[in-house]
Length: 345
Image (cartoon, rainbow, N blue to C red; front, side):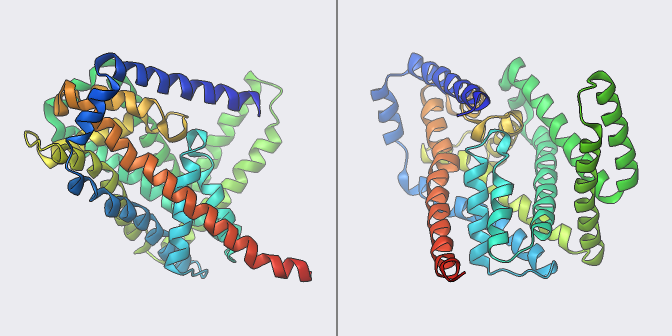
């Protein structure tokens, strides 16, 4: 195992350890179990179809994009790609493993790498745009609840907003104004090369041209099918709404009703933005800690830790297990399907 991966594992372990210490400092394991047992499991079970819909929304985006690109795939395969993306995104730092895995499996099903890359580009633009739109709306809906996040989380939220907004603007710039984008990036590469002469400027510029070529093809697809991007954005809005809805299900499962659906979901939007850009697998550790701080007013001291456990289990860990099984089964089926052909070759 590489040194970098060991460092990341140590960071994640430290964050999870600190979160566990924070929880157990306030409640014993028996008290936590007793509080979780109070939840209405009939309400919590609604989280299963909600998270299934979460995966389906991205699958629908991919299904629509690949049809436009002339590489149509059955919806069930697109659902598999989305499961694969969720699984690998949540076990790799900065979610770097999700999209390459999806493109890999698309390619094994006959989709060219170029078309798979364009699909991921358009899905990412829809995803980031949805996050920014929900984030702006959440600031208005949450009202005084944003003050409960505190200074440190508020700082993370500000950085998160900035990161998502800059990334989204950069992708739109690359998509629709590639020449100005190329000039800006070449200037940045030149400045970095002067600061660090060991950088391979030619290699970086070649990679830049490769990225921009993908954006150029994506822009061509959008111009040829103007309804595609709004459809992808609608799917992304639906996808993110699913994950933002989970804490409200947990809230209602405890029989609480002092805060509205919009307030609870808006707070989850802000919590997600505060940790979504951190280079941690599935935001592990950070997401739990920020939830404990942000939702204390909503659930109260006695229920906030059980609520965090249930919410993260439903929206992340349970889905991670299911998508991992789907990925493993799909991978095995593809290997077995290629086995006879490979043997004949």
